[in-house]
Amino acid sequence: MVVSFRELKTVSEKNEAFEKGRQLFAGECQFVFGTQRLEQLPPQTLPEIAFAGRSNVGKSSLINALTGRRALARASSEPGRTQQLNFFNLASRLMLVDMPGYGYARVAKSVKEDWQRMMFDYLRGRPILRRVVVLLDARVELKKHDKEVMHLLDAAAVSFQVVLTKCDALSVQKLAVKQAEVDLEIRSHPAAFPYLSMTSSQTGLGVDMLRAELAEFARRVV
Image (cartoon, rainbow, N blue to C red; front, side, top):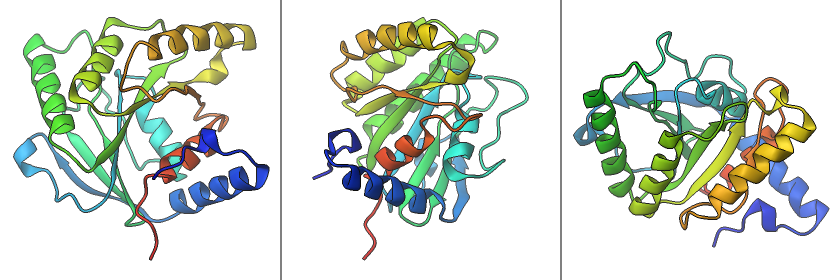
């Protein structure tokens, strides 16, 4: 049974969880596979954590911050262009899956529909997928596409965790307002992890806690 980091009671338990997260994400992390076709997905050998978010939400930056790399995950020079699932093996204990960005206005409708179909089929047909991390830009209002993805995850019965990015760009007061807005949205989704994470790839805000939370799903060291 996985015990959430948020449920830990003592300082020593939390410090131990932080250290486990640090050690895991300090391990070797390598790109292993990228595909646009579900029939070409790699074997289900490790627990998977997938990262989803609108184009330019800071997904690549957060993955790089978590793993302590500068260019492990690379953002496309043209938002919305990358349309494949990228798999990264983290210390042979966890697979990080970088999903293509959604919601970019200049992408053709047919491409958006193909992306949604691929995403849903991947989510529904991947039993080893432990959680989807849904990234939202703290500076931007909650978009229609964000809500659609959350409903998609509800329909696929896949647990997801909402993470705010670029929180360093907001004042304390504005960040509190944003947190309240997103918390309200989260409560309306049965598949949502009940706690919102606030992060900044620039300052490191929330990165240690997110590492600790995601490390709960890693394959145990024998």
